[in-house]
Length: 150
Image (cartoon, rainbow, N blue to C red):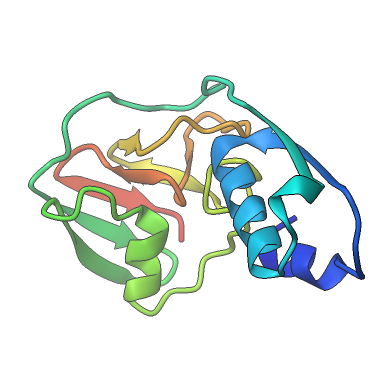
């Protein structure tokens, strides 16, 4: 579920009951508001959960990192001057089109294997992260080099 799909499903006045993680909820609430749904018609609950199986570090952002998207053969530089830039955004800025849906670490659609290096998360993922993988929608490099199966 994402904002555009939710907006397609709206067929008139209704009450909306939503439950999910903070990032997921923010995107759905924004979509409802953009569709003209009044705040009085929306009821919601946010929840969070720590990472399960995620390989993360809590380190400060690196000053820059060389990121290799191995399947596509792209090698690009992640600039630490923009520490909130996710690996998904980096990929998109360099012409790649990785799969994604929520951009909030909720759905797991962007799960990508880490072939070398490590990542740090911009927010705690709520989707299950298999060992040796990352959610590129909320991850950034945690070292000077990173290799992704993308």
